[in-house]
Length: 91
Ligand code: FES
Image (cartoon, rainbow, N blue to C red; front, side):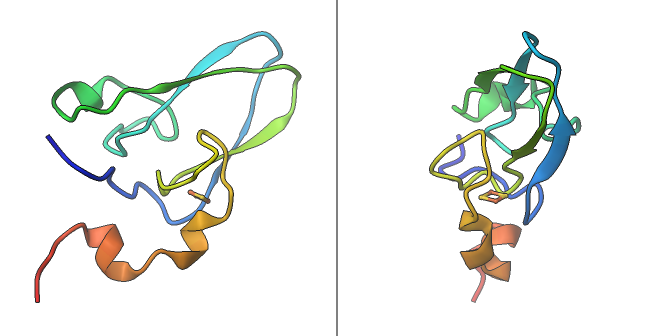
């Protein structure tokens, strides 16, 4: 089980959502269908976050998986360092 989600992208994914449609935002960072869940979280302990579109609009979904307002980008990605993206503790 991972402690931190994988940084899928150091920035948001802009997606035009459809009013009334349900989306599942990938929280683990492993999905191949970013920013949405493809089931890759199974062994991680993470669960996708449900998002129901209230309008036909462009939404900036968090790609770094560190947002405090997930599934939305809140600019937390700006403070992410390269070592956080790699996810290793190498010295
Ligand atoms: S992409 Fe995660 S906070 Fe912006």
